[in-house]
Structure formats: structure tokens, C-alpha cells
Length: 200
Image 1 (cartoon, rainbow, N blue to C red):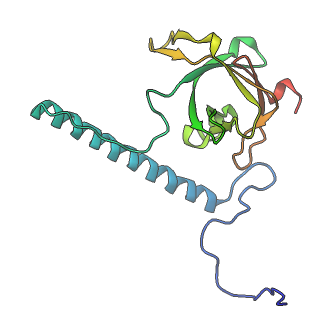
Image 2: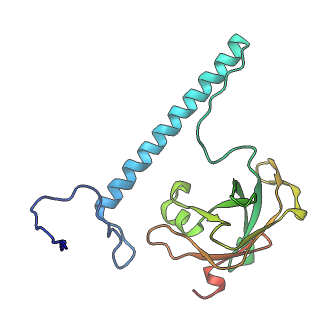
Image 3: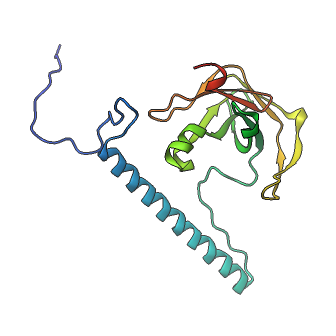
């Protein structure tokens, strides 16, 4: 039987080091440069897709022929949504957020779903929703959707209306999986209680 052995090398390992967070919550310059490149690339992709979408709309208007642009994206207008109330220490700071539910079929002819929400701690730290998204899957977390509470909800700030799929409840604590984030939460009837409610 062969025993694996480490071979020392003088070559520098390419890429961002795995341990980028150090005591005190700061990041290395390598990590910061990596994230800056990632943000720049994401913004370029969004601008490119916006140009594609504009070209498709212009072609549809000028030719009278319906054109369509298809891409793999999470946010679809036909995906069901729920409205979560994020409870803060100070109730005056409570805020509502529209979250998406993505349904996925299972082998048991059931509908599993993934709840997509935003981690407020990551959003505050990075300022970007790209780095603040959390996905909770009903296949590996106990989570229920009460469809008897379907309702039309109107956002008072934007005036946009949404048909809500119902209310969400999780049967256990969930947590943000972002590197360096320890935020935990539980959802009860679409009311979200964060880490500070549990002294975590």
C-alpha cells in the first residue's frame, strides 16, 4: 500500500489563499482584490445582458415579430414569493422583504422548494446583494409553506404588487453560509427572528 507524502516546493500557489479572514474580522488584500475582480465581472455581465434585452425589445418593435431572450436565471416573474418581516431589536427598525421561492420536483412526486433571502449582516458588511444571498432548501431544513395564507401584497414604497404564495415557517435554526458570517435566524409564520433574539 502506497503512503501519500508531501513534496516541498518553492513554487507559489496561484489563486486566493483559503484562509482570508483573520482575527478582528479583516480580510487580506488578496481577498479584496479577488472580490473587486468578481464585482467588476458581475457588473459587466449585467450590462451585457441589459444590452441584449434592449436589442431584443427593439427588434420586436421594429419588425412586428415577437423575439425572446432566454437565459438561466433564478429570478423569474412566475416564481412564487413570500414577504418576510425582519424583526430588529428596536421594533421601529423592523423591515419587510420580498423573497423568492424556487420549486423543485422530487422523486416522491412532491414539490420541494428553496427559499432565497438576504443576510442583513452580509449586506451591511459588503453593500452588495450578490454576497448576501442565503438559500434554504426544504430537502435539508424543516420548512413549511402555509398556502392557505396566499394574498396580494402591495409594497408601499415602490407601489409594486406581488401575489404571495403564503407564509413560511422553519422548524429549526438556519444560518448564513458566507465566509466569516455567523448570522443565524428562524422564521415563524413569515416573521424572521435573527441571532440577537437568541443571544447567539
